[in-house]
Length: 91
Image (cartoon, rainbow, N blue to C red; front, side):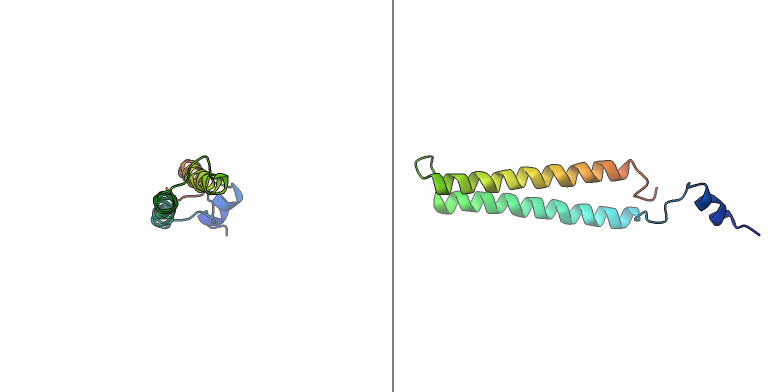
């Protein structure tokens, strides 16, 4: 006798690897905190060292921090936007 779950798994209608909405929201909140922390780090670096274009090392390091913030925000945001529209999150 075939159970409904086995039948649906064979039909690929259920993704057993899907995370719950609660787990996904918690992970998204952690990622948002990480982005906020990276923003604070970049802001603090600028406040402490006052980078100018005349000091290339400080200026480039500050720009690297800002790039890291943008990249993390883009990557995390892109993943969660994709995940909510896919089978990776239980509906």
